[in-house]
Length: 113
Length: 115
Image 1 (tube, chains in turn cyan, purple):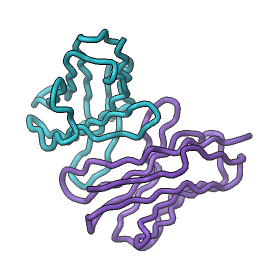
Image 2 (cartoon, one colour):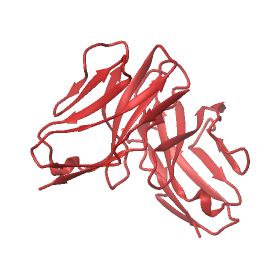
Image 3 (tube, chains in turn brown, blue):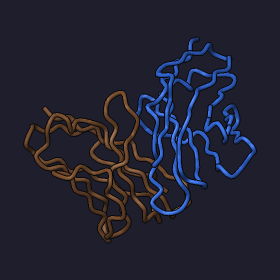
């Protein structure tokens, strides 16, 4: 049973480009969380999704950021028109159910140049 | 809302010795979980230990144990017989029970293990 898979591991984008980060949860997990880790800081919650539904996006910036978790395929975190301040490590975690352990992927390090 | 505070940005310990990492938290929830995660240079977030707030007994996992003081809202991690592989960033985190259980993380403590 493969763990949570995130790709790419490293992503470099120029200012103004779009970044797409992918997260494949563990098999059987229907809950996905996205977190952002700025340098020298802890992880900050961004969004919580279940299949085809956004449950809580209170941690997402209001503009340029969006997330989805379709019925088939990975969860996608999309950042449009990236700026230097978006440079961070983005982590995905999946859970089987509400009161179960969260398993984290290895993260995607986004660098905006 | 929940907040988690780690007041030690860096700690060091001699190999085979014991070290304690501090964490305090604040929450309005009556039922919640507390966690310690380890993040080595690979960046993988690894769950070290977890504690249910309703349990009075401190959680233990091999060389890792916690000192959970609910009234003081304190949740420290003790690492015994420290090993070189324990060197990592350690994050304390909390979440409420039930749905929408996003984790709230502290700012982390960088642990160095000296040979």
